[in-house]
Image 1 (cartoon, rainbow, N blue to C red):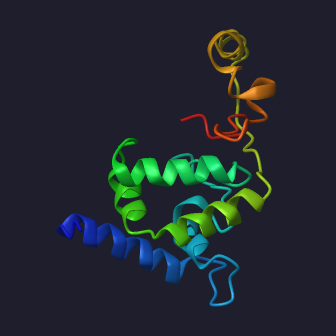
Image 2: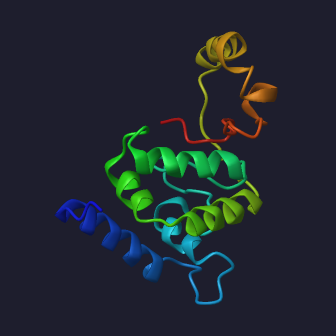
Length: 150
């Protein structure tokens, strides 16, 4: 097991978020959800453009994402360290909890010309997995519409 100082710091940071995050309580349906709340919000609807919205995503996608972070397939210093510290049960609990939360799409200003070009790219490359213009998903993909643009 990797016990590097950086990994210990990241896991400690995650545990601190669990204790300090709003909505965290001993009776929470998914205590692991409180670990995620520090960045993604208590219901998975991030209010910060640096963190994606995880509410309403497929439980299969959330599980895959956490395992991909843990394995380094999706590189992320923070999420890699946090995901490596999760058990299978915690991953399942987080996936179940956040998949049941309704997604709140973020209102953002849009450049109509860029949106039109983006729609063409989406139709050509993305629609096969990110259905209905990114508003729906198959069980292995994420909802895109309403995510923070960055």
